[in-house]
Length: 355
Image (cartoon, rainbow, N blue to C red; front, side):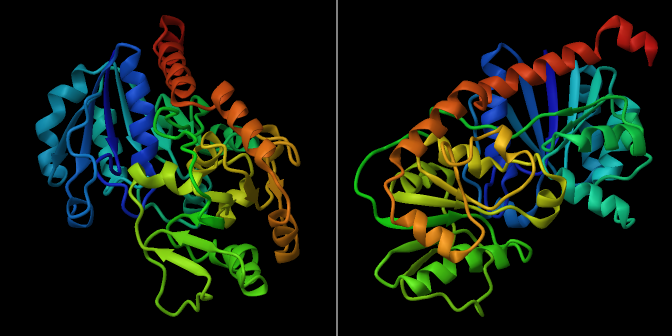
């Protein structure tokens, strides 16, 4: 299969979770024998922070603007499938361009489904508009559950399918070594996640000054008053993620408000931490229990007291069981097989004739 992907970024993981998601998925998809071209908008904030410039599993090319994208029209037309990701600059026009010229299956890959739907509901068409949705053969969503029916019913998608994030198990695995921190969090600053981070990490840090904490990720405001026992790491490249998790007795999963409201929205960090066998303390949302068994594979916390109680226990068995669950169902190989099946189904003669 020849696949063209137009995504936010493959080259830079700075300030986004898209790059690691695309890297894991496309590496596994290429391993299934497919040819991939990734087209990325050349923007200065990623150009200055690139940590993947020459992947060995796909061709990576950059385009300057919408006019320059026209230079890739022949590749898009010849592809068996073309996938446009969420948050792509000028995503509405990119989607229209793809739908005009692609002769194969077209898909929208929404790595931010609840955020996207909240934007559409308030008339914000930053990268997707309601009139473009029915023109994609597939709407591949990071969110499962009832949201899939909503996308089909309200926005007219011919086929909304869950394509959760995943993990590259070769890159994310237990590395052993000394535990440097009692509790860590890895994620870019987000205003709607910050209250949970305050409640489930910063407050426990203040209450337990003898314990060690760390928060890794960019864009946190200077005004945040970090306790002395919270180490700040501004940006941690993906190559350092496994070591970070392996040096953590526990790690925290914090979910954006829109994703909590939608449910069934696991973050890539959830699977990556679990693959490293690091016990996870998480906030609550509908559908989480279908991914990890609460109490056996993940610890749910509502308050700082819940977190402090968890830190007093030995939870290595929870981390091991979470890793087993991830390796059985949530690796990039699993997602690549799902993606291939979705493309095959959408391109079947019966589906094409029905369209």
